[in-house]
Amino acid sequence: MKPRVLWIEDSARLELRNLAAPVYSSGRFDFNLAENVTSAVNLLKVTSFDAIVVDVRLPPGVDPYWKKLYQNAGADKVNAQLGIKLLHWLINKDHIIHPDDPPNGFSANQLGVFTVENREDIQDELDALGISVFCQKTTGLPDAILIKIFDTIIDHKPM
Image (cartoon, rainbow, N blue to C red; front, top):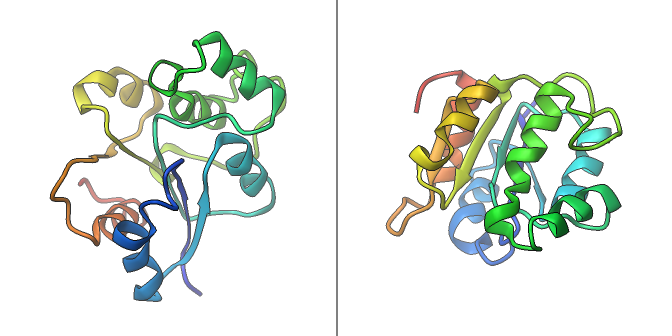
């Protein structure tokens, strides 16, 4: 059975050719995409994943609680950092972030962050969450970078 993986990325459709296509074409994963926090949560409620890669700058989707967090941050993905809030909610079951219980069974070793933020800018959050897999989106990354990130998470190796 192929490992089931999820990429939560708001510009995933724009990056399909360069970043997602190698994952699809490798045939190694059951690959899923979510483009906002609400869609990601809906997927996480019904499907278990072996590896989840999250962007920091995510839109809220239609859920009113995620929308409120987003609006309280000025409706700005940079400041809202809903990806980090989603991770806190999943790992720590933080009801201050969202009143619903998150889907069960998530651990930091199933999660990675792939974002434009510098590692130093979010290192305290990564440490607090226990997430060790991080990759910064920069120009010149290999097309197979998502495969590498998913492999790192699944194999529990440092990146």
